[in-house]
Length: 162
Image 1 (cartoon, rainbow, N blue to C red):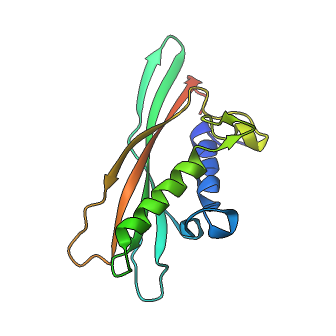
Image 2 (image 1 turned 90 degrees about the vertical axis):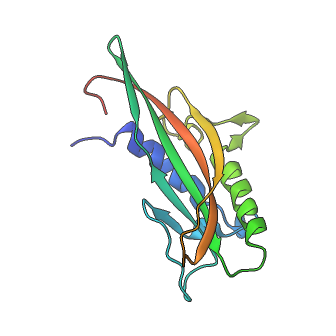
């Protein structure tokens, strides 16, 4: 039976962290209650006022000796309904929540390896980096506005080891 890849384990931990974004857990928003994976939300009358969307970009592997070092961009969208009061401030609150949830600290140490503080092995041996925050381009007729926070996951593995 094949084991999950490091990418899969890291992404699962990242999605888990984002799922903690709720007011009940001390965050500014409830954006973690609605996480879209690989697709943009389509807000309608029965949909939430705020949501997250997670996209994995093209990786960039490099061979060095017998090791493969790979950088994988992960984009997290903070989205809100365009017709809500103060959408810009709501987006900023979600971006702050994303940063707090992803860049978690425990016992004074920062976990940039995804998985390390949950009792499992560190899945990102070389780290997680925060990238730029960008506004999302609003398509004509779109029901939502938003911004994205980019992270780059850096993996290292040997040939044939996912």
